[in-house]
Image (tube, rainbow, N blue to C red; front, side, top):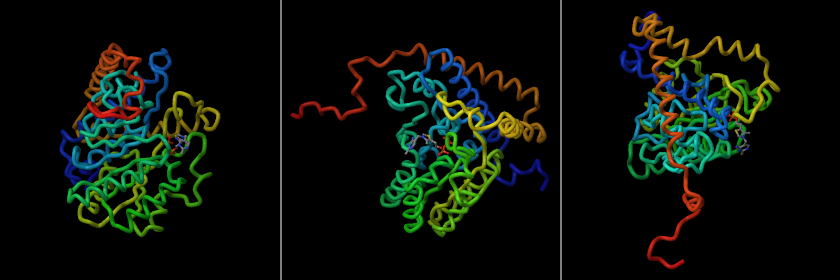
Length: 338
Ligand SMILES: Cc1ncc(C[n+]2csc(CCOP(=O)(O)OP(=O)(O)O)c2C)c(N)n1
């Protein structure tokens, strides 16, 4: 097998590859645009997944949209785009607009929630989504559905008790869950080596008797292969898997963070030289699927699409002050005394 046959052995068509590249470009452009809008004072706060697009697209492509329960965390812009959320919908949430389909403008940046796409509501306390995913998988099994649950989290989340409880329960009941760690090396300012006694997140799988796989998270095809295999195990009743996608967060933790206080420019530059988008672009060019010129043209189109979506969302109506409690507190059902 030559290096240019990798996608063929994975059963991915040229149009799959183009879509994957588009999603990576779109997520990057969207997240970068959000930073500009913060600087312009049009968005209060943002969090992005720049650098993690290969991990996210590789994983999302291996799932069944609308069937599998997906519990993405706040960096997963590319995951939600892959599952069918539009650029404009993400911006509506970023601007906190009334018709934001995630929360009507109530939630923080990138706190996803789209039940009709089976994107489960994102909870802010780190790692709480893991037991939620286990609950989704248990519910799917009890109702006889073929759905699995895929849940993502950062390396910091593996230090939480929720991680242990979720993996332990899922392993005992052999539930169809894929635990997907986007190990971007830091939990805000804390490097992974200062919070883990073992060198790899995947090493922890042994404690639960489940497969633990470390994969190059900047290689979209390698991630796809690992998640597809885990999905196969889950659907075959073989239980959960833990996948660690090793990657890097290019931008500060959020728009409220100054990452120069805890990591060097040299370190960031070294990881940026392994940019997953450039790497996949190189593969597509090598295969003759997308020339560098066509790739550059696509990137220009994506930037224009992202800018247009941001403009439309910016013009959308704000939530009305009298609706401030809606979606936050339960409302009396009509015709019922409270
Ligand atoms: C229980 C809890 N403690 C602290 C925080 C504040 N906080 C938000 S994100 C974060 C770091 C999470 O790091 P990691 O899981 O590695 O994900 P990353 O942000 O690096 O992608 C922290 C400490 C929180 N949201 N919840």
